[in-house]
Image 1 (cartoon, rainbow, N blue to C red):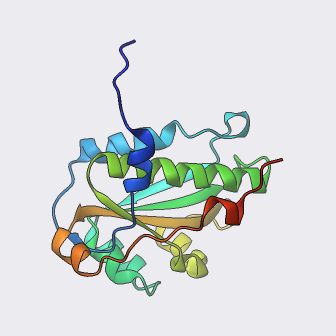
Image 2 (cartoon, rainbow, N blue to C red):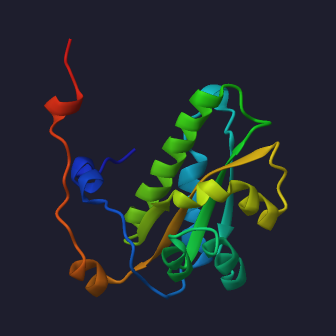
Length: 177
């Protein structure tokens, strides 16, 4: 296998949340590549306890947008990855929610690798039952974990509202034993 030099740590640090999109189609092949990266997310006993509904239809986006204060972001994004915990596949809720966090990170990094923008929308979770109704999903089997809005970055708007990235120093959140 040929190994290419790649600054992975720089890539990780360069990813940021994007709230401003220009409406431009993202090819289905690109969306499938992002889902392919999600497919390889690790999970306990390889149980893969997730369901992802990919929403690009404007009517569905509007219905979902009405359920959150972040609706404008959702509507302006080309696609929204709606992520559920599949309780039938779940073995250990806490561990499976951690796996879904890894799934979300895989999606975010795949989006970033395609030079697209993404933002996790979590406010909608307060209306998880209504989201299940939209998709006709049984609330006993599927629990909404979040939505990732994905689109082509509106560079001018992002620059206009850009804030410096602030992160806690390592010493503030870690200890070495």
